[in-house]
Image (cartoon, rainbow, N blue to C red; front, side, top):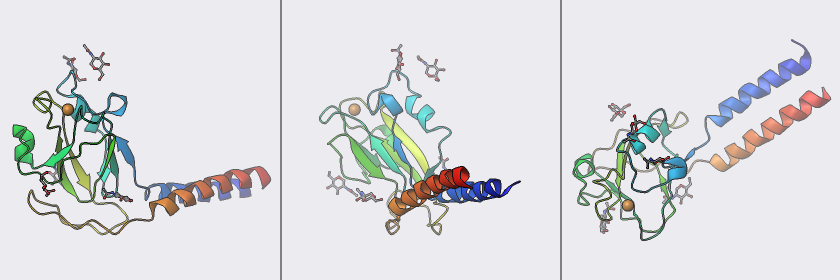
Length: 172
Ligand SMILES: *[C@@H]1O[C@H](CO)[C@@H](O)[C@H](O)[C@H]1NC(C)=O
Ligand SMILES: *[C@@H]1O[C@H](CO)[C@@H](O)[C@H](O)[C@H]1NC(C)=O
Ligand SMILES: *[C@@H]1O[C@H](CO)[C@@H](O)[C@H](O)[C@H]1NC(C)=O
Ligand SMILES: *[C@@H]1O[C@H](CO)[C@@H](O)[C@H](O)[C@H]1NC(C)=O
Ligand SMILES: *[C@@H]1O[C@H](CO)[C@@H](O)[C@H](O)[C@H]1NC(C)=O
Ligand SMILES: [Cu+2]
């Protein structure tokens, strides 16, 4: 491997390492958004294959007053009940929700029978690779959110490294 190849390889590895520290924003349901689906597996299909980390953000895309978002316990999720809420009701869309603790998180829409009609989302959050693992939160306990990560500077660093690698490959 020649010199520029080596430099490129090093920078590529650096970029991948930095990338893994960047918080991810997920748009719930992708282009379908947060609405009553025509299929009971729409949101479980959406979750499947994704790995959610502490620090990641969920964007619930919905029109204000048509839907809402409430984080509840597993029991309330299964029974579509608004009791035992873990968050306060989010009524303004689109809404960002921070995944600030590990473990299972359950979200429902409390409008009409939307939840009964499968407008509900459950997912499992893993400890982020860059922070020390925090204990899984039970239904009534909530772990303190980790200190704000410097994801902005990580994004910048990653862009910087990518640009640098391209420039070096042209010049070297
Ligand atoms: C169900 O919804 C999906 C979007 O999630 C859409 O692509 C599909 O055409 C719909 N199917 C029916 C039968 O309405
Ligand atoms: C619901 O989605 C699943 C998985 O994508 C699919 O196998 C099934 O046929 C769908 N059912 C309906 C009624 O569209
Ligand atoms: C549950 O909902 C009520 C009413 O919206 C709110 O006052 C309360 O703070 C919520 N509980 C939590 C833990 O957010
Ligand atoms: C979510 O986290 C971001 C930074 O990661 C912060 O700016 C924002 O205020 C947080 N939002 C909530 C609702 O905690
Ligand atoms: C969530 O993750 C934890 C730890 O990785 C695991 O023990 C638990 O079974 C998972 N829950 C679900 C519903 O997959
Ligand atoms: Cu709804």
